[in-house]
Length: 257
Image 1 (spheres, rainbow, N blue to C red):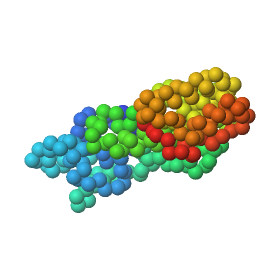
Image 2: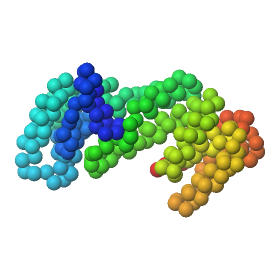
Image 3: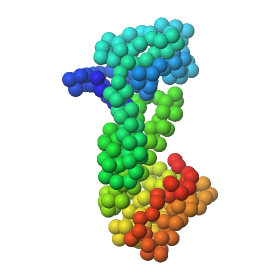
Image 4: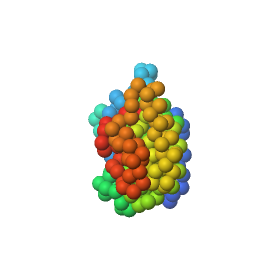
Protein backbone atom coordinates (compact mmCIF):
# COMPACT_ATOMS: atom_id res chain seq x y z
CA UNK A 1 0.00 0.00 0.00
CA UNK A 2 1.00 3.62 -0.54
CA UNK A 3 0.27 6.46 1.88
CA UNK A 4 0.28 10.20 1.32
CA UNK A 5 0.21 12.76 4.14
CA UNK A 6 1.94 15.65 2.34
CA UNK A 7 -1.45 17.16 1.60
CA UNK A 8 -4.87 15.58 2.12
CA UNK A 9 -4.63 12.02 3.43
CA UNK A 10 -4.31 9.63 0.50
CA UNK A 11 -4.24 5.83 0.66
CA UNK A 12 -3.86 3.46 -2.30
CA UNK A 13 -3.88 -0.31 -2.36
CA UNK A 14 -1.35 -2.50 -4.15
CA UNK A 15 -3.23 -2.01 -7.41
CA UNK A 16 -3.07 1.77 -7.12
CA UNK A 17 -6.75 2.07 -6.28
CA UNK A 18 -7.80 4.69 -3.71
CA UNK A 19 -8.87 3.44 -0.30
CA UNK A 20 -11.36 5.60 1.56
CA UNK A 21 -10.58 6.33 5.20
CA UNK A 22 -13.39 8.03 7.15
CA UNK A 23 -12.67 11.61 8.15
CA UNK A 24 -12.35 12.51 11.79
CA UNK A 25 -10.71 10.24 14.34
CA UNK A 26 -10.02 7.27 12.02
CA UNK A 27 -8.12 9.52 9.61
CA UNK A 28 -6.28 11.32 12.43
CA UNK A 29 -5.30 8.00 13.98
CA UNK A 30 -3.88 6.79 10.69
CA UNK A 31 -1.96 10.03 10.18
CA UNK A 32 -0.55 9.78 13.70
CA UNK A 33 0.72 6.26 13.00
CA UNK A 34 2.07 7.16 9.54
CA UNK A 35 4.16 9.99 10.96
CA UNK A 36 6.26 7.24 12.58
CA UNK A 37 5.93 4.22 10.28
CA UNK A 38 7.34 0.95 11.58
CA UNK A 39 7.99 2.63 14.94
CA UNK A 40 5.96 2.42 18.16
CA UNK A 41 3.67 5.40 18.80
CA UNK A 42 2.79 5.78 22.51
CA UNK A 43 -0.85 5.19 23.36
CA UNK A 44 -0.81 8.30 25.55
CA UNK A 45 0.14 10.47 22.56
CA UNK A 46 -2.49 8.84 20.34
CA UNK A 47 -5.18 9.52 22.94
CA UNK A 48 -4.12 13.17 23.25
CA UNK A 49 -4.03 13.49 19.47
CA UNK A 50 -7.50 11.97 19.04
CA UNK A 51 -9.33 13.79 21.83
CA UNK A 52 -7.13 16.86 22.42
CA UNK A 53 -7.27 16.66 26.21
CA UNK A 54 -10.95 15.69 26.41
CA UNK A 55 -10.77 11.91 26.22
CA UNK A 56 -13.82 9.98 27.46
CA UNK A 57 -13.51 7.58 30.37
CA UNK A 58 -13.66 4.69 27.93
CA UNK A 59 -10.85 6.14 25.80
CA UNK A 60 -8.86 2.89 25.66
CA UNK A 61 -11.85 0.93 24.41
CA UNK A 62 -12.66 3.70 21.94
CA UNK A 63 -9.06 3.73 20.71
CA UNK A 64 -9.15 -0.03 20.20
CA UNK A 65 -12.39 0.37 18.23
CA UNK A 66 -10.75 2.89 15.89
CA UNK A 67 -7.70 0.63 15.51
CA UNK A 68 -9.93 -2.34 14.64
CA UNK A 69 -11.72 -0.25 12.05
CA UNK A 70 -8.44 0.72 10.40
CA UNK A 71 -7.27 -2.89 10.43
CA UNK A 72 -10.35 -3.88 8.43
CA UNK A 73 -9.82 -1.04 5.97
CA UNK A 74 -6.07 -1.62 5.55
CA UNK A 75 -5.33 -5.35 5.50
CA UNK A 76 -2.02 -4.63 3.78
CA UNK A 77 -0.83 -2.41 6.62
CA UNK A 78 -0.96 -4.34 9.91
CA UNK A 79 -1.40 -2.23 13.05
CA UNK A 80 0.35 -3.95 15.93
CA UNK A 81 -0.07 -3.47 19.67
CA UNK A 82 3.19 -3.17 21.61
CA UNK A 83 2.68 -2.74 25.36
CA UNK A 84 1.73 0.95 25.73
CA UNK A 85 2.03 1.75 22.03
CA UNK A 86 0.73 0.97 18.56
CA UNK A 87 2.77 0.57 15.40
CA UNK A 88 1.78 0.45 11.74
CA UNK A 89 3.97 -2.21 10.13
CA UNK A 90 4.67 -0.71 6.72
CA UNK A 91 7.87 0.01 4.85
CA UNK A 92 8.63 3.68 5.66
CA UNK A 93 9.36 4.26 1.98
CA UNK A 94 5.65 3.62 1.29
CA UNK A 95 4.87 6.90 3.11
CA UNK A 96 5.43 10.04 1.05
CA UNK A 97 6.75 12.07 4.01
CA UNK A 98 9.48 9.50 4.61
CA UNK A 99 10.47 9.44 0.92
CA UNK A 100 10.43 13.23 0.93
CA UNK A 101 12.84 13.38 3.88
CA UNK A 102 15.14 10.78 2.30
CA UNK A 103 15.27 12.57 -1.07
CA UNK A 104 15.81 15.95 0.57
CA UNK A 105 18.71 14.56 2.61
CA UNK A 106 20.20 13.06 -0.56
CA UNK A 107 19.94 16.44 -2.28
CA UNK A 108 21.68 18.19 0.59
CA UNK A 109 24.44 15.59 0.59
CA UNK A 110 24.96 15.96 -3.17
CA UNK A 111 25.99 19.61 -2.90
CA UNK A 112 25.16 21.95 -5.80
CA UNK A 113 24.66 20.42 -9.23
CA UNK A 114 22.35 18.37 -11.40
CA UNK A 115 22.40 15.40 -9.01
CA UNK A 116 21.25 17.59 -6.14
CA UNK A 117 18.62 19.24 -8.33
CA UNK A 118 17.27 15.83 -9.32
CA UNK A 119 16.85 14.73 -5.71
CA UNK A 120 15.19 17.99 -4.69
CA UNK A 121 12.80 17.92 -7.68
CA UNK A 122 11.71 14.38 -6.86
CA UNK A 123 11.18 15.38 -3.23
CA UNK A 124 9.15 18.47 -4.08
CA UNK A 125 7.02 16.53 -6.56
CA UNK A 126 5.70 14.58 -3.56
CA UNK A 127 4.53 17.75 -1.83
CA UNK A 128 0.82 18.05 -2.74
CA UNK A 129 -0.05 20.90 -0.37
CA UNK A 130 -0.16 21.64 3.34
CA UNK A 131 0.83 18.41 5.12
CA UNK A 132 -1.74 16.62 7.26
CA UNK A 133 -4.61 18.55 5.67
CA UNK A 134 -7.81 17.91 7.59
CA UNK A 135 -6.05 17.01 10.84
CA UNK A 136 -6.34 19.36 13.81
CA UNK A 137 -3.09 21.27 14.19
CA UNK A 138 -2.65 20.99 17.98
CA UNK A 139 -0.90 17.65 18.56
CA UNK A 140 0.59 17.71 15.06
CA UNK A 141 2.22 21.15 15.32
CA UNK A 142 5.79 19.84 15.83
CA UNK A 143 5.43 17.55 12.81
CA UNK A 144 3.88 20.32 10.72
CA UNK A 145 6.76 22.63 11.62
CA UNK A 146 9.32 19.92 10.80
CA UNK A 147 7.79 19.17 7.40
CA UNK A 148 7.37 22.86 6.55
CA UNK A 149 11.03 23.52 7.36
CA UNK A 150 12.14 20.52 5.31
CA UNK A 151 10.04 21.79 2.40
CA UNK A 152 11.71 25.21 2.53
CA UNK A 153 15.17 23.66 2.80
CA UNK A 154 14.39 21.59 -0.30
CA UNK A 155 13.10 24.63 -2.21
CA UNK A 156 16.27 26.53 -1.29
CA UNK A 157 18.48 23.60 -2.26
CA UNK A 158 16.81 23.30 -5.65
CA UNK A 159 17.07 27.05 -6.21
CA UNK A 160 20.79 26.98 -5.38
CA UNK A 161 21.33 24.14 -7.86
CA UNK A 162 19.28 25.92 -10.53
CA UNK A 163 21.26 29.12 -10.04
CA UNK A 164 24.49 27.19 -10.51
CA UNK A 165 23.09 25.74 -13.75
CA UNK A 166 21.95 29.12 -15.07
CA UNK A 167 18.22 28.43 -14.69
CA UNK A 168 17.57 31.92 -13.33
CA UNK A 169 14.04 32.34 -14.70
CA UNK A 170 12.88 29.11 -13.05
CA UNK A 171 14.17 30.34 -9.70
CA UNK A 172 12.37 33.68 -10.05
CA UNK A 173 9.07 32.04 -11.00
CA UNK A 174 9.28 29.59 -8.09
CA UNK A 175 10.40 32.01 -5.38
CA UNK A 176 8.46 35.21 -6.12
CA UNK A 177 5.20 33.90 -4.60
CA UNK A 178 7.00 32.00 -1.85
CA UNK A 179 8.73 35.03 -0.31
CA UNK A 180 5.25 36.50 0.22
CA UNK A 181 4.23 33.40 2.16
CA UNK A 182 7.34 33.34 4.38
CA UNK A 183 8.51 36.97 4.24
CA UNK A 184 10.97 36.71 7.14
CA UNK A 185 13.06 33.93 5.62
CA UNK A 186 16.20 35.66 4.40
CA UNK A 187 17.69 32.71 2.44
CA UNK A 188 14.68 32.74 0.10
CA UNK A 189 15.05 36.47 -0.52
CA UNK A 190 18.78 36.04 -1.08
CA UNK A 191 18.17 33.39 -3.73
CA UNK A 192 15.46 35.46 -5.43
CA UNK A 193 17.63 38.59 -5.45
CA UNK A 194 20.57 36.69 -6.93
CA UNK A 195 18.31 35.14 -9.57
CA UNK A 196 17.03 38.59 -10.56
CA UNK A 197 20.58 39.96 -10.78
CA UNK A 198 21.99 37.08 -12.80
CA UNK A 199 19.04 37.26 -15.19
CA UNK A 200 19.93 40.90 -15.85
CA UNK A 201 16.94 42.21 -13.88
CA UNK A 202 19.07 44.35 -11.59
CA UNK A 203 16.39 46.93 -10.77
CA UNK A 204 14.08 44.15 -9.56
CA UNK A 205 16.91 42.70 -7.47
CA UNK A 206 17.46 46.07 -5.79
CA UNK A 207 13.73 46.54 -5.23
CA UNK A 208 13.47 43.08 -3.67
CA UNK A 209 16.31 43.88 -1.26
CA UNK A 210 14.64 47.10 -0.13
CA UNK A 211 11.35 45.24 0.27
CA UNK A 212 12.79 42.59 2.56
CA UNK A 213 14.73 45.24 4.49
CA UNK A 214 11.46 47.06 5.24
CA UNK A 215 9.70 43.81 6.16
CA UNK A 216 12.44 42.87 8.62
CA UNK A 217 12.53 46.33 10.18
CA UNK A 218 8.75 46.64 10.49
CA UNK A 219 8.24 43.11 11.81
CA UNK A 220 11.35 42.37 13.87
CA UNK A 221 13.10 45.71 14.22
CA UNK A 222 16.14 44.18 12.51
CA UNK A 223 18.23 44.90 9.44
CA UNK A 224 19.06 42.16 6.92
CA UNK A 225 21.78 39.76 8.00
CA UNK A 226 25.36 39.95 6.69
CA UNK A 227 24.78 37.39 3.94
CA UNK A 228 21.90 39.30 2.41
CA UNK A 229 23.76 42.61 2.75
CA UNK A 230 26.77 41.08 1.00
CA UNK A 231 24.57 39.97 -1.88
CA UNK A 232 23.12 43.48 -2.18
CA UNK A 233 26.55 45.10 -2.10
CA UNK A 234 27.79 42.74 -4.81
CA UNK A 235 24.87 43.81 -7.00
CA UNK A 236 25.71 47.48 -6.51
CA UNK A 237 29.33 46.69 -7.34
CA UNK A 238 28.28 44.82 -10.48
CA UNK A 239 29.92 41.56 -9.42
CA UNK A 240 26.82 39.49 -8.62
CA UNK A 241 25.92 39.18 -12.29
CA UNK A 242 29.21 37.42 -13.06
CA UNK A 243 30.31 35.60 -9.90
CA UNK A 244 28.12 33.20 -7.89
CA UNK A 245 28.03 33.78 -4.14
CA UNK A 246 27.09 31.54 -1.28
CA UNK A 247 23.49 31.61 -0.10
CA UNK A 248 23.02 33.78 2.98
CA UNK A 249 21.60 30.81 4.87
CA UNK A 250 25.16 29.47 5.10
CA UNK A 251 26.56 32.75 6.39
CA UNK A 252 24.23 33.76 9.14
CA UNK A 253 21.50 32.44 11.34
CA UNK A 254 18.87 34.65 9.76
CA UNK A 255 15.31 34.60 11.13
CA UNK A 256 12.88 32.19 9.57
CA UNK A 257 9.12 32.12 9.51
